[in-house]
Image (tube, rainbow, N blue to C red; front, top):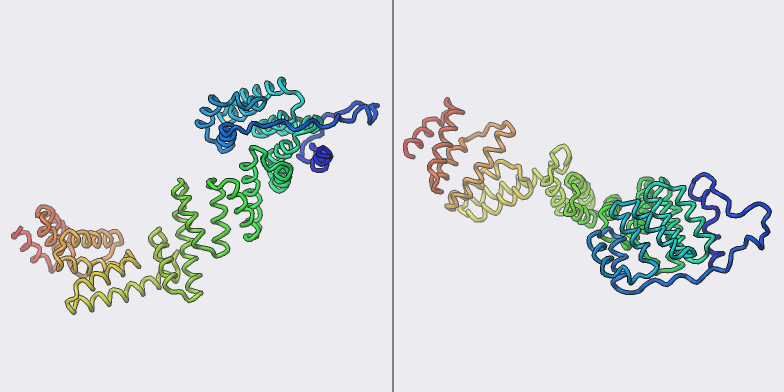
Length: 428
């Protein structure tokens, strides 16, 4: 019954895998009775030793050092599966010759075990030798038994070939249905769902792609490519918060998503603005700018940020004129949270900090103003250098103050503030 099920799923492997016709399995003139396969043998027993189970998982998910250690410790407990595990371990290590040698060792020890050609097919497919993989699968079909392993191997061979994702996924899911405990199935299932998700997303099917992305994550939640597909689907579907959280995880995992996150924040800001949520829109635009998006990239978001920052600056000036230095400070800091490039807000913050006797803070604010203005080629309406020098002196750095004033005089010897600068020098 189970062999009939296998044949129903695996009709003509050569055609299925898109390969050239392979050898025939019977000779001309043989009767059906002579060529009929013997009853399928019982499925080989797999070790359920927790350490062997951990070894399989370590190999499947590429944890090479752990896999080597576990194999040395408990490989013998895997019984007839041991050389097949070693084959996978050697392939993971990059030694294809040793992997194939281990497969043949397993074949010699258990020639009727259908798991052997199944693993052999996966090894050959990983090496790009798809015709050899197809021959192994046909051999496995003639042996009987091991249907779930053969379905898994067929799925692996397919997903390793261009355009094989959908068919490969069907076979992997068939393996899961036949035996949910089939080893080495989670990683291929995750990759098959990943392939299908990418294909559907590229065709505009974001909702359908998201289903595959979530399925892929269930089988391999730590895979960065799966997280990226999830994030891509979610942001297309306007679920920006979850998408951005995933992109940040990708950044932590070593993938550069800075520019992408800036673009997504910009889109999220526009989306929230359309929904009349100005607070959320401003937060997204602010994050987009912090990630490096310029005014052109921000579009209307840049205008919104400037308006918000200007309003905060006006509140700060009013508070300063009323003698409320702490309120002024909060307002100018709020302006800079919205727009870090707002020179007036930073300059005013320096003034407030100076009045609060936070001289190092004032120095930092005015130095930032000067650096930004010079980088942008902006001519400042007042000599910020002289304010900076005063703050540097009071912060206990008279030499820095002298250097700042001297630099100002070199740059602007004809400035109407030159006499004031020279007076500061005399007092230093």
